[in-house]
Image (cartoon, rainbow over all chains, first blue to last red; front, side, top):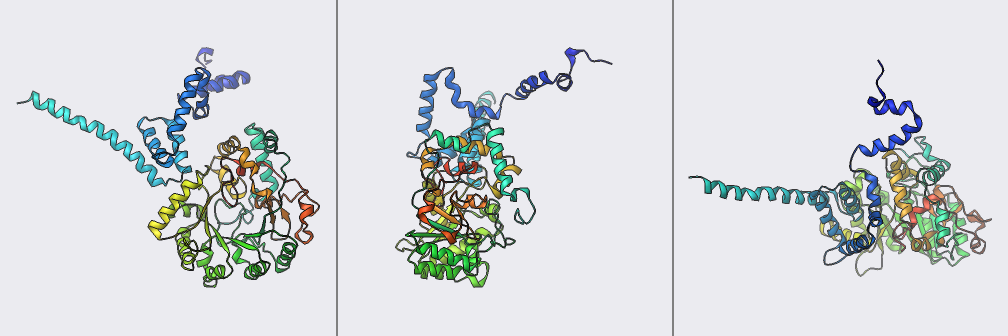
Length: 140
Length: 348
């Protein structure tokens, strides 16, 4: 039984027409996930749509991560922890590389992630007090 | 673990490595070739300065088989410099005013004529650097007195220690290497090396244990000094942060771990013209175990001899060599990335 064209699977389509399969392969690939690791390299290009604000952001960003009262190494570990808190895959990739380059040990990196996890977990649990207050106010 | 050569690996061939690097940069990544980057920076052809360092690789034999080794050294490598070739090096040196002789390998101390060679170089009044892998000092009782030998001859010791803990160090250099290295560092410290008031220099070499670039040399130095002293009572002078060059076993690691594209892209995109101006090959002559001349130890391992009528140490002539241009290829991106990299650490 023949499958109608509009119900063809991706692989059927690709094998039927090599030119189109080449074009579609790319768009199907992009549709696999919202996050594409290659996009991290394009971060600097956000200025294409709004240069002034991008320039200000990257200038600020550079200053934030420079050596200061905290070392660049300490800031990188903080950034790694925050990356996990905001669950940004680009940031996790970037600051895993950055902390390795800055000579952080794997134990230090994982401890930073635990700090993020502890704050996130604690943030939920501390609201348990609010729940307890409310429960007590409603109960005999 | 065997060397690439002993295991018949195709990357033991320098021609295969060079072809792979060219194809990777030009075809896969579609990025500029190294000479094009130099051209853009106004540095092509790359010209040498008067040589300041006479670097001699006295053999590829080593007691370690490190995963990143650009020499593909190991116990199964039998290429060793003879005393005759050493004498040719001494004759060449005597004709020049080159102040520093940098001895490397393999483990240079495993060459049976190593101590004689050091003594003869010192008689010529030249400063000697030995690139000591540390573990050789405790590998066999016959090497236990090396710290004292180094002290007597005022040798500067430069030693690889890729991390300040056992886990990362052993993953790169072999099981037990960190522990043996700490013992050896203690022995060097005990005869005065690396001590604050001593002129006996003990420098460490850091290289990343993976597919990433080294961070700030100053920051790494502070970290190494703090941990090695606090946890092991070890002191040293300087730490040289060097970039892993994508050849030989490190190239094999990059390809087999799936990091080749990203690493090469990172190196090319991190090209720094200031680092390129300060590359060590402009100040170095590198001599192989069999007496041939190269612009650096990496070119030596890729069999890229100097572009000069003088290609062997027996015909050594500084004036003729100073007319050459430095031989470059895609691996050179490793020395020009970021803060730059050389046998003495960052260059920019």
